[in-house]
Length: 116
Image (cartoon, helix red, strand yellow):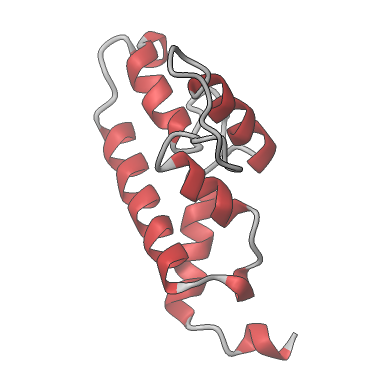
């Protein structure tokens, strides 16, 4: 508990923003990435099954506690927030029916069909 009190306030904001933008559970993201990674090349031999990036990195952050974040994790969170906000701001004319746009967001852990 005392360790949390010493967290940088900027990390607190990034944590909150990240979890607001990444609106699917770690298990949902994992299942989506497994689906995406099971294309023609199939899975590689590594333990992470060669899950698509940056989804694999986002998934790793979702599985961590705030106090266990590394500087690399914080950068992954920043990039995910930025990319999700950019994509949602560029909503295509077809909106949710645009599979390419929706899938790009799902790759980042954001499902446009989930209401906030």
